[in-house]
Amino acid sequence: DAMVIQNPRYQVTQFGKPVTLSCSQTLNHNVMYWYQQKSSQAPKLLFHYYDKDFNNEADTPDNFQSRRPNTSFCFLDIRSPGLGDAAMYLCATSRAGTGTDTQYFGPGTRLTVL
Amino acid sequence: AQSVSQHNHHVILSEAASLELGCNYSYGGTVNLFWYVQYPGQHLQLLLKYFSGDPLVKGIKGFEAEFIKSKFSFNLRKPSVQWSDTAEYFCALGGSQGNLIFGKGTKLSVKP
Image (cartoon, rainbow over all chains, first blue to last red; front, side, top):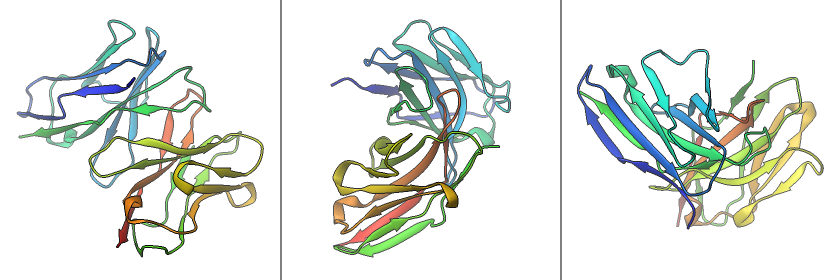
């Protein structure tokens, strides 16, 4: 089945230790998104790629970076995780990136920061 | 600014009860509205969406939602819930760049 895969499902890191979360897709979609969801809060968009074009949300901290080496893969890098970065990180894809487009989500990576 | 609010944090129903989950949005332009569901241990998946035409939208598993422009609302309904509907439900507004602006979600617990 075509899908969005996130690895790992659970990630534990130490305060200040860089961490990378991975997302891959078999849908061949043009757009890939990263959302952050803290406990009892709405998922919040961090940034997205339309093909190779990177689009950062204005309020996304510089501590968060992303890479998309090819259509299938997208990575979220947290350069110096703080306690406040503990959250579920959701990857999603869409075909065309329009307002009517359905987004397809991965299962998420739960990040714990010690 | 675009925003979405969901009124109920946690709803508990018995099987066969009717369901209505509230969703209100704030946006002055053309709206694209979605309901996503997250079953326990699973990923977010689309229930239904509205972007034009008939304001009453039917989705999967017997769910429907009605877009009422004058009330800025897009409430989700189901006439008779089942235990398997236990999940978290998110209302979302489609942004201009295809991003989603989510509400905080409503947890639905259905008692058998």
